[in-house]
Length: 508
Image (cartoon, rainbow, N blue to C red; front, side):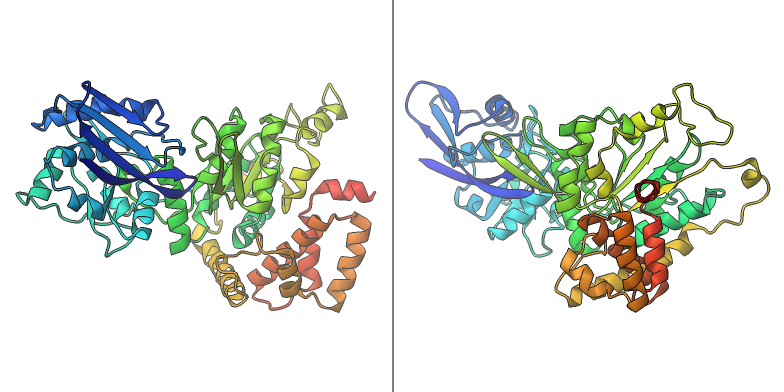
């Protein structure tokens, strides 16, 4: 007799159905798993054997063969334990085989028969729902599985024996409730930042349009402090964005207790991060920081200290909104639509350009340090500002700085304008920063004075095609913050001012 159980493998954030076929038949006593299993899957036979014994069952003295079909698809991870165990139980008649056809199953087994938490339950639940099946998953992951569909049949047992009792009718498992992570009581607030009014203005613009931002300044100027306060002015995730972000976090095993949150991700990897850590990869092609920051913020502090090749690997995700991991045997794509925020010192000693400072290495100190960042990467950054050192006078006395709450209201209004604009154009969930070039030309529409000014500026500053469209996107955001339908010359002038000093030097 051959029993069948459906489980799921993961290809990016897509769940691919896998048919677990179990046969208990005559032959030499053995427990064999075939179908391209990795080490974790191959070792599951020992966990399954111990879990069945702890549950009061014993494997018959026969040959047990488990086939994971399709056989040419690599199987990775420990979530195959539970479907294999249920397949064996159905094959020996411990549970009814026909009941399992209504569910997709995943879970790791402990030696005592407990069902341990696994990663990827949310995308698995979405995949099972697409197949018209319910889901059997660990109790610790039931809260995230419940988000897939309110009508979906979900069983979240604590142990293998509890699930067997449910199928026998001696115990009833209730459907788990969706879990939502409570919002933090307080996020770092902009009112704590003294001075830096122009930098706070740039941060507000970046938040309103989803623009990339680079801050350059001496140590202690407040660059990291400003970046850490960006989440406090960003709007919460929309339902579709929430699902995408949570599916990636689930695959990475970063959903604490299966709880979802509507806060936008804020990732700040150390500058020693490898290319695989940043864009994804490794033996199992896992999502990297750029995908874990999807629909949120990727903050790179001390930007030139990153390996130049690692930084240049961000160029494609910043342009396409996807991280493509290509290997000899498979190709995986993860969503990576991020807001890129970076901070750096002007030179290695950190004080180039400050009054009274003279570096022993001269101008070469700054030029060599800044040359670690390639021009194509800089061209993808909409806003480049200098953050000067804060004077003592800015720190003395009481602060009457504007809190994040007031700034967040303006950002939310600008985002709402963009949401409605692009929804009417058939581009839901689009911000000015990631709008297509043809669309941004249509929705910007500078007046006559603005068009003449833009043409003259583009010629003098030798803007690239990408730089030209990014200026238009930034100007459109400035107009949205002002509540204007059309883009005026003042918006274009401010947008050009954020292109950085390098353009001014190029024009000279």
